[in-house]
Image 1 (cartoon, rainbow over the protein chains, first blue to last red):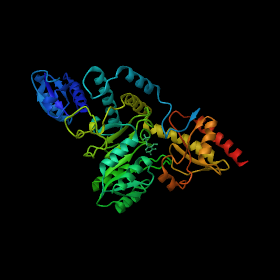
Image 2: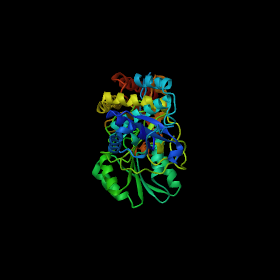
Image 3: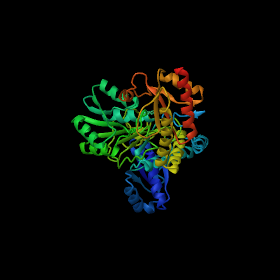
Image 4: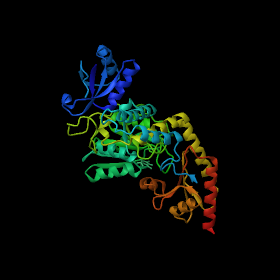
Length: 76
Length: 378
Ligand SMILES: Cc1ncc(COP(=O)(O)O)c(C=O)c1O
């Protein structure tokens, strides 16, 4: 699974809801503060196989993400 | 008991609101945005659902433009103090409630300046007044959409268009209009819409909202603290809504607010105003026919402001309470507006109608005032 880090819980919710509406299984996770350098953050976990589509949907909804943590769980 | 004080806070709340508050306290007891365990997530979902509903209802660009506050006053303080500082100029509605007047006065004490403006009525006259009173240093225009002691209405779209052209922040106090008057943050050109959750939106006390226009870049924060994100940074997060939500939000109240907004939408905003105006007009007509009672002439709306000759308004309020009728008397935290209406000395009695009131309530008010005035005149 991949995780897109976002700046707030509200954006995480918005992202999850947009992805779910397009049948992409998404979940909100906490992100290791050590990875963001800015303290606590949230991420949207989604299947890496649908990364391109996910990025497009997030962009369409004006949801900026920091990084995409790939491969492992990414969350804490 | 007859409740005619909906302008202060609506009562009773719809049963769905009561159920939602209790359910939230039972089932969503975590702290929203603080962690991702199931109870924290249920609380976060509750906030998000309400943001979504409010954004849709008030024509905002998205759920992230809706920040929760404790009431309209907190929202107004954040909007006004966030928009200006020493050396800046503000334009304040003459019909302002102290919720917007006092933050402006506090800024003025700290080196800002302000002017009062008449912002309800004819849009062309208002545009001229804005043109005349706005200066290069004017940072914000603060409009009372509908005042709490009269039914007049400010033409938001016209004021919004002016503010956009001039790059001035438009802050709207919708404490008396949210839930009864159509408002669109984007179409009306509003930068910050300040609303209480507990009046026309039928939610519980302890919640309000600050709804931001898409173009509004954000102001300074006046409250800092935990936000659940970016804890290593010294300031609040840059982006809304978390920027404006320091500390734990009132999740159960927001759960109730969500159902309150849904109830208003089901009933229909226009129908709310039509219902309340019809009752207020019936009460005003009946009161006007009484000897020794003076009704302040006004536009159609939910409020009737009146005086009983020779009786201080609080005494009339007390007499009505003795007869089981709840109204509010005095200056209603709006001394500026009362001055405009000519009731600045001792205020007046305000009956304000809500969707749960009936014609019987309007008649009961008139009958009780008739009895009080007759006794007093004897
Ligand atoms: C016009 C107006 N503005 C602001 C407020 C303050 O609202 P709140 O009590 O939610 O802070 C009120 C409350 O009566 C009001 O009538």
